[in-house]
Structure formats: C-alpha cells, structure tokens
Length: 228
Image (cartoon, rainbow, N blue to C red; front, side):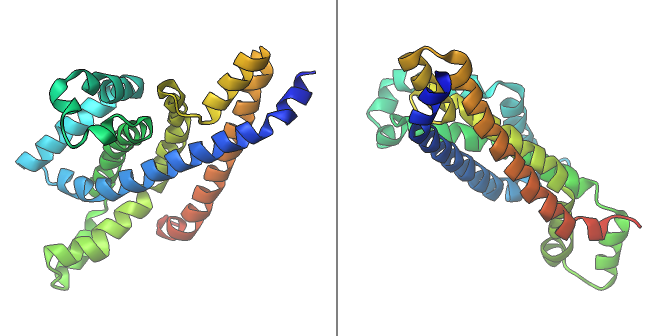
C-alpha cells in the first residue's frame, strides 16, 4: 500500500522539510536585512539611488524565479572568467546558488513593500516628529521605519508564504528539499499521487505555522495602530 511506503520514507520527507525550512529562513532573514536599507533609499523619490533600486526590483519582480535560478546556477557556469574566479567554489554550489536566487528575489519584493509602507505613512506622524525637532535620521529610526515595518506585516506575510512555496524550485538544482524528497519517493516506488500529496501536506502545515506566527505578530504590533 502507498501509505506503508510513505511511512517508511518519512525520514526522507522530514529531512526535506528541514532543508526547506533552512532555505526559507536564510532567504527571509537575509532578504529582509538587505531590504530595509534599500526600502528606505527607495522611498527617496527622484534620487538616482532610488531609480537604481527600482531597476533592480523591477527586474527581479518582472522575471520568474525559476529563470533567475537557472541563470545563476547554470548560466554563470558557462563563462570561463567565472570558473577561474575566487567566487567559483560558491557559484558551483547548488545550495549557495539557490539561496542567492531566493535572497535576491524576496529582497526585491520586500524592498517595494517597505518603500510603499513608508510612502503611505500618515502625514500627521511625520509632522509631529518634525514639530519636536527630530532630525531626519532620528525621525526615520524612531518614527518612520518602526511604523512602516508594522504596517507592512500583512503584505510581508504573503511574501513569506510565497517564498516558502518558491523554495520548491531548489529541487531542480539537485537540492533534496520537500519537493525533492517527493521526487525521490516517486522515482523509487512509482506512486506520484501519494508521494506529492505527502509533500503538499508538509507544505500546508508549514504554511499554517507561518500564518499563525504572522497573525500573532500583527496582533501585537499592528492592531494598536489601527483606528478604533
């Protein structure tokens, strides 16, 4: 029976789920780390830096993540200069290339989310900060950025879920994540429905966990800002 085979291969799925979790955690943490300063700079309308960041976010939001992963993992390897460079040990690693593609992709989306939240802040908050003599740096650090990050939680929660689902592309470059585990089970036992529905259950449980965590974060940091 398929169910017996699934139970026998649960260690493979658990290992794949752990790999998926690691890819997700690295992507979200590094993506958010880079997106915060980029989002602030992106909010400065009309500046050259803002336009350069817009080009970056436009390119990565306008192309499929699968294509980005292929270009980084397979595309760069065809150049002899890359193969002879000091970066080749990293760029020849499927794990590094997958993380790089995911970080660049989620960073682009998160940058626009944060920049949009900054631009949408109520004018009263900014005027109140100016009225008490806050400098631009202090105002960003104490008022604008904390408020923007709180207000961006609903949109960012969707990005985190999309990123979780996007990590399934890692199996294409030989990483044994959840989808890769399902492929191994299917190729060994020829049970495609049971193999992939099991992976779907794991993804569903991980998504529920993410949604629950973001709901708690919104209840703590976002609801006090909402009008009563």
